Amino acid sequence: MLDNVTDAFAAAQQWLFEAAVQPVAFAVGAGNLLEDGFTATGWLLVGLLQIAVLLLVIAPLERLWPVEPLRDRHAVRIDVLYTLIHRLGLFKLVMFFSVELWLTEGIGWLRAHGLPTLQIDQLWPGVTDRAWVSFIIYLVVFDAIGYLIHRAQHRWHWWWQLHAVHHSQRQMTVWSDNRNHLLDSVINDVIFVVVAILIGVGPSQFVALVAVSQLLESLHHANLRWSWGWLGNRLLISPSFHRRHHAIALGHEPGTTAFSPYGGNYGVLFPWWDMLLGSADWRPGIDATGIDDQVLHGRDYGRGFWRQQWLGLKRLAGLDRPVAGKL
Image 1 (cartoon, rainbow, N blue to C red):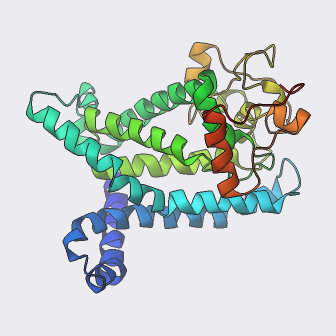
Image 2 (image 1 turned 90 degrees about the vertical axis):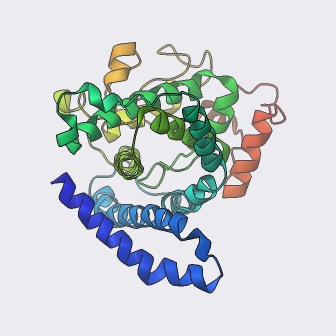
C-alpha cells in the first residue's frame, strides 16, 4: 500500500513539474536548476495536499466540535500566513539553497573522510522488504528528537524567547502549528536535516515523514474538543492533551506553576516520551491559551507577522524585558 501511495505521489510530482515548474524555469533562464526544481515541486505538492486536508477536513470539524468560539479572526489570518510560508515550500526553498546545501556538502565531505551512515532502520530484521517498517522506525526516532527539542525550547531561556511566538497565540486553531519565529524554524530544520542525513533517511522518506508529522501537529493544535480516551491518549497525542501544553496556567518560564517550572506535555506526535520522563499532564479541563505575562500583565508579543518576528529578536537580545511589576 505504501508503495502505491509513493508511486501516485511521484506521478503527480512529475506532472506538476512538467506542467508548471519546468516551463517557468526555462522562461526565467534557470534551466540549470531543474533537478533542484523537481525537489521543490515535491515540497509544493505536499503543501498543497496538506492545506487541502486542513481546509476540507479539519477546519469543518472545528466548526462542529469547537473548544471555544472564534473571536480573533485577525490572529487566525496571521497563522494562515505562517502556514502558507512553511507548507507551500517558501521557507523550505530558502533553506534548501542555503543552510541545507551547506550541511549536505559538509556531511558529504565528512563521509568521504570516514564518517559512517548509521542506517538505524536496518536494526529491524527484514526491513528492506517492508518500507512501512522503515517509515515507522524513522517516525519514532524523529518524534523522540522533536520531544527533546521542544523541551529545550522551554528549558533554555534564550530559546524560549523565540518559541514564545508560538505560545503567544490565544486563539488556537488548525493553522497555529506553523506560528513560529523564523529563526526558531531554522534551528529546528537544521537539527532534523542533520539527523536525517546521519541516520540514512532518503529524500522521499524525509518528505513523507515531514508531511505526516505536520498534518498530525495541525490536528493537535486545532480548536477541537477531542480526546482519544484513556488508552488512545496514551498512544497518540490528542488536541486536548496538546492544548494543556499551551495553557496559561501551566507555565513556561521558571517559577510560574507548581506542576513544572517549564510546562509539560512536550510530545510532538506520541505522548510516550512525556510518560517516560515525567512531563505528562493528564488533568482534565479545557484551558485558555497564551503566556502568563502576556495575559496577566499585558506584555506585547505582537499582532502582526513582522512585529512578532521583531519582538522575538529583541527578547533574544535582552532588549525587550518586562517592566517592573511584570513576570
